[in-house]
Image (cartoon, rainbow over all chains, first blue to last red; front, top):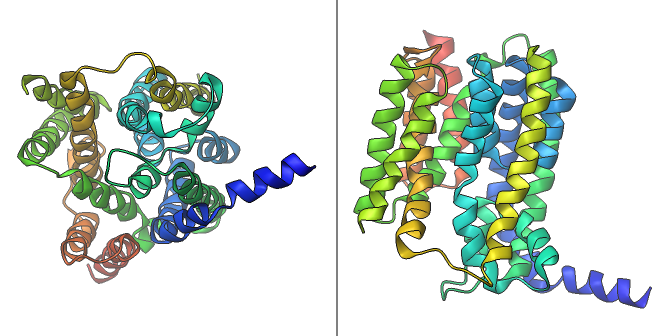
Amino acid sequence: MAAETTTTARVLSPTFRAGARDAVPFALAGFAVAISFGIAARSAGVPALATIAMSAFVYAGAAQFAAVAILAQGGSVAAAVLAAVLMNARYIAMGVSIGPSLKGGRLRRALEGQSVVDASWALANRGDGRFDRHTLFGSSALQYCTWLTGTVVGVVAGGVLPNPEDLGIDAMFPAFFLALLVGEMRDAQARAVAIGGAIVAVVLGLLAPPGVGILAAALVALVGVRR
Amino acid sequence: MSVAEKAWLTVALCTLTTAAIRGFGPVTVGGREFGPRTQRVLALLPAALLAALVVTETVIQDGALDLDARAGGVAAAGLVLWRGHSVVWVVLTAAATTAALRLLF
């Protein structure tokens, strides 16, 4: 009992609450995008429970949208999962960077690493090569709640709204990821890779089977080996 | 395989791979670090993939080029983003502009 109280006090530390507070705009935008994910997944033929399970257990917006977009285009499970894996590959880099700031043995570190999403990772970055893990947990916890509830709302709305496209919800996802993309534009090479990836994705999106264009765009990042 | 079965299999495999990917960095970082070239490629992956997702989800519909209201909405979102507004406004502007364009045309 005493140990449990101590744990609660530590988890709800000032930096945990500060992390949650800083994450409010991302959590609100995530709520809106999650609604659009729920609707998009339902219209792609994904069962309601599977859509909610995906947000609950995967909790990675870009990967979820990429996988569902490929299923919606009639692509295979392998292509959908591969697209999600490649989309999530950035978490390897984020996990490596945040590793030294986490605590405990291998299992605990692996569990703590589950809290990494784009915005929580960025908010936890102290700018000196170290990360505040309570900020990470706090911002991730709030975003998880709105991502999950937004998905449930989207799943329900998808069954009620006669034509969700009338509300422009299909533009929310590309807009949200445009905001994340702008955050990635740190130098000239990143900008060149983004333009290259966009061109490859559009050209192959018109010529190749569903999903191939997005996967092929990942290859453009290989120019990074030159430097 | 039905669409529902494909969806459930995709959810299960995405759950496993995502958890493994998120756990990978924290578990391995104590031992081996990636070389600078690998780290650079990993750092550039989001730019390539996010750009690919944004453009395909904006201008392609059912395998064909489709510059419709949605593209206008994302362009408006880009303007709001460029003006330095919160991501909440970026997302809502995209939806509102797209909805308005669909209503008008």
